[in-house]
Every structure is written in C-alpha cells, then in structure tokens.
Length: 139
Image (cartoon, rainbow, N blue to C red; front, side, top):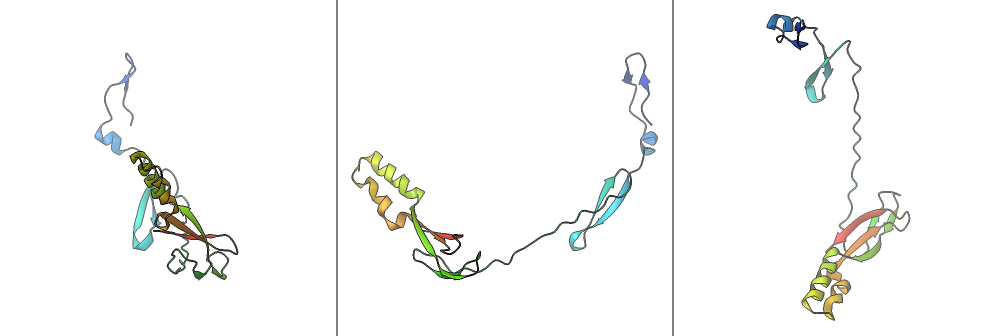
C-alpha cells in the first residue's frame, strides 16, 4: 500500500501503483438530510457522526411609520408602548466638511453656518420610556 523506501537515501522509490492506491482504506459516506430536498454527503473516517441541527430564528419586523425631523407617534419595538419619539439633533459629517471647506476658502465668518442649518442635521429618534434607539432621519 505504501511505496517502498530506498534504504540508501531514505527516499521513496516511486509513488504507489494504481492497484495499491485503490486498495487503500475506504471512507464511510454518511448522508445528512439537507434543507429543501437536497442532500449533502460527507466523508468520515469511522462511524457516522451525529447530525448537527441549525436553528434559524426570524423575528417579524415591525413596520414603523416614516421618521422625519419632527416627533412621531408609534409603538416602541422594545417596550411595546404607544409613545411620541424623543428627538436628538446632531450635526452630520457633511456639516463639518462644509465648515472646513469654507474655512479653507477664506470665509472664516461663514464657516460655522452649516452647523446651524437644519439641512445639515441628523435627527435621532428614541423611546422616551425605555430610551431604546428607534431610528435616524438624515436630510
């Protein structure tokens, strides 16, 4: 089954012949039931292995009303209460880029204007009851 070792150089003399390689130990094939009528076969050395089970949990996504710059009434997905969302305004990264661009151009006085404009703000909606993050509205 294995190639003969040349005793002078301790190197194999030749690879095994076709008949020797065909007489090698066989692997048991265990057919695991697949998903959707498909089956997958795996080679194992020895007896069949226990099949592993995969559990897929898919939550039903709750449909939220469209978020905007104003507070929205909705059912909180976390605490399941009907609430008006709490809004936190923050300047977007585009506002900071415009500030730097205006400063580089030489409009030092106008460079802070993008930080004050609503068009450069993100509005984060959260639940006032459980403080869970609900979504963000970007203009």
